[in-house]
Image (cartoon, rainbow, N blue to C red; front, side):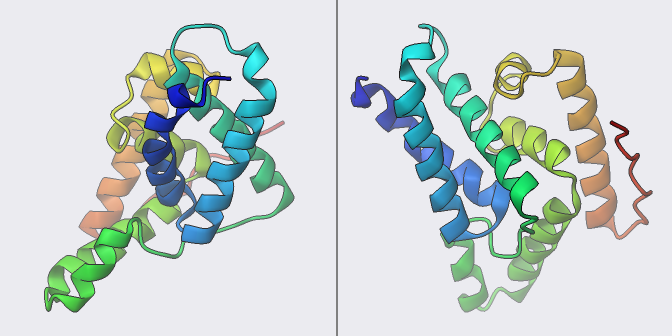
Length: 166
């Protein structure tokens, strides 16, 4: 494996993991687990979109972790937001906390899509490949996530989500 190929994506993986799980230590663990799996499975990668492949691995690791324990995002999205509370801008700090609560209220499936598109600026096609779902599913999850988050931020009641039947 040429590690130089992966290095540029580590900041993206860290940012996405922090926003996804909400806890710095858990995010670092998720990135480390992702990179370890990428190293072990690099022989399976087909030249193409390495970024989507790494995010796909992170998605799978995250889902596996969700199945084993139920974490809930409770810490700030990014260490840069920690400074907002100390700047005297209470309004900005409150907005960040409200956004964090709104993201935490989303299902993992909706939160993943919203963060990949909104935070990581991935295309619908990249998200579709990373999550292994059809592009239409990406679009509908994104629409629902945006609507739920908008309602949360506007203080409107958020309707209960549909339950997945297996």
